Length: 99
Image 1 (spheres, one colour):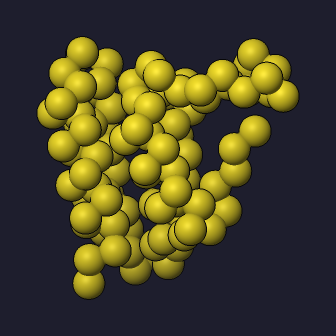
Image 2 (image 1 turned 30 degrees about the vertical axis):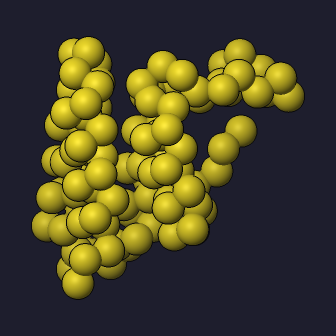
């Protein structure tokens, strides 16, 4: 099962979701069906990555901004608007570590 533990994991996972979202995630034969990547799981990991990148309480508004972008991207994927969803994910990627 995929783990989100470091900033490097977050960077890798952003690229993974951009490449395989919303429904082309590779089936991993070593994982049970319940552990296979899904859009819901992918975005849960991205949200966890926001917490890893900005763990301090002083960054609550920054986390909210980033999670809002993720919410928009997720909903666009769910609505079948893959191109706008991917653009929002790209925006998230650009914004996640902007100073």
